[in-house]
Image (cartoon, rainbow, N blue to C red; front, side, top):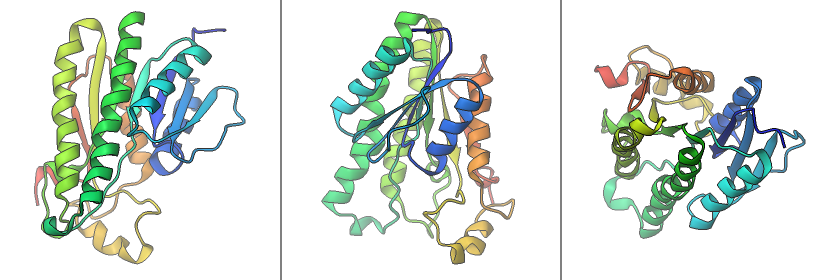
Length: 236
């Protein structure tokens, strides 16, 4: 096994931003461990696809263990998996609450613990968490308390982990997207969604990928919450 090449682990990797991140890291000659509930096996020998529920503690352990067994190292973890459900606060159900916390927080917690253990043993690494601009820019037109509760927790954890591990060469950063043009948004909503950003457009998947790749290459940056939101976090 040749373990000289870097290895990135990407959660929520079967579509949208996650799938684009797999392609982007492969274009930089990384090997990739890609995971999501429904991900299909890859025909690329340098991509290990692992299906599983990221909220299950066993999934995080298995993804990191199988990545190490296959490629010999873990250099980067992108916690991209997430659930976003916009509802008035009193309309969230107990099932909504459990599902969103399971994916957004439990999914981050379990896999990141195992990734950090691997990074410590090899002498360094990088973690990128995906949050949302709504954490810093609440909007009455998008009622989303559970997104703010969970993704806000990730932003706080990003800074805490960055400081805890700064002396051990493990960097921890986050990308905070605005509304990104993905299949989850109906095309007829694009104009209204674009107007929610001071720049007057929705973000593209490539905007988020470029932000993650910047953080990956920025060796003196840790604890950063990089807003990629068309100016939403700056004001209106």
